[in-house]
Image (cartoon, rainbow, N blue to C red):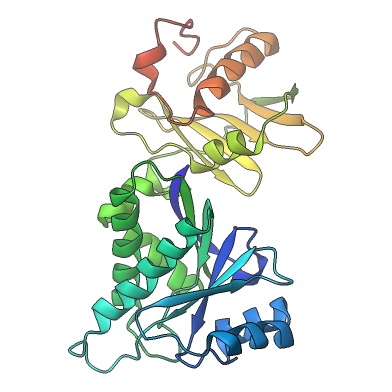
Length: 304
C-alpha cells in the first residue's frame, strides 16, 4: 500500500519496519522522543551503535538496528532548531524526512513511523512542521510510484493530532490519506439493526487495504468506509447512512452489525447480507479499490 496516516500513539509502540528518532547531530540520547526510543531499544546497545557512526548533519539521517524495538531499524533524523524561518529551517526539515525515506527504501522497509520532527524542544511551529513533513512524504511517494510504503506519524497530543489531520486534508499528500470518520458525511447505525457472525480469514495485506478505507470522489462512488481500531464502518456515500459495522476478531469469526431501517437499507435476509458483504470485501481488499460503477455489471446491486 501507499498511505500516510497520523495516529495518537507512542512511536515506540509502532510495529512498522523502521521508526524515526528525532536525533541531535551528536547522536546522543536526549529527552522526549529521543529518550523514549533509547530506553525502549536498549540504551547501551543503541548508544554504542550511534557512537560508531559518530555524527549526522542537520537535515539528514543515519540508520541503526532497532534492537529491542518492534521495528527492525531506527532512522536517526536531525531536524533544525527554529530561529526565524530564514536560516534554511524549512529546507533542512524537509531534508531530514526525505533522507529518512530514502534510507527506509534502500533497506527494503515497506513501512516507517515518524514523530513530528523539530516541533518539540527545537521550537519549530507545529503548522509549519506538519507542512514540511507532509510535503516531503508526498513528494517521495510521487517520485517513487512503484514503491509500496506505508508512512505513519505517531503523536501524543490531541492538539498536534488534529493539526496534522487538518494539514493533511489540505495538502497535496491528501491522496495518500487514510480515511477517517470526519472525511465524509455519515450517520450512526440506527436503532433498527441486527448482528450476525461472518466467518472469513483476511491476510495482513488485505487488512492493510481495509485500514486505508475509502474517501469518495463523488456521490456515485457508493461507499465511504473507514476503520477505528479493529472496527470497520461502511456508509453509503450519497446519504451517509451506516449500513455495515464489522468488528474483526482474531479467530476470524467477525461480528457484523447491519442496518435494518427499511428507509435506509432494504435487504431480505442475513444470508443475503453475508453474500453482499463478501462481494464488497473482495473488492475493497484489492490493491487498488475500484469504484462501485466499475463493478456494478459483475454483481447484483442489492442496495436499491
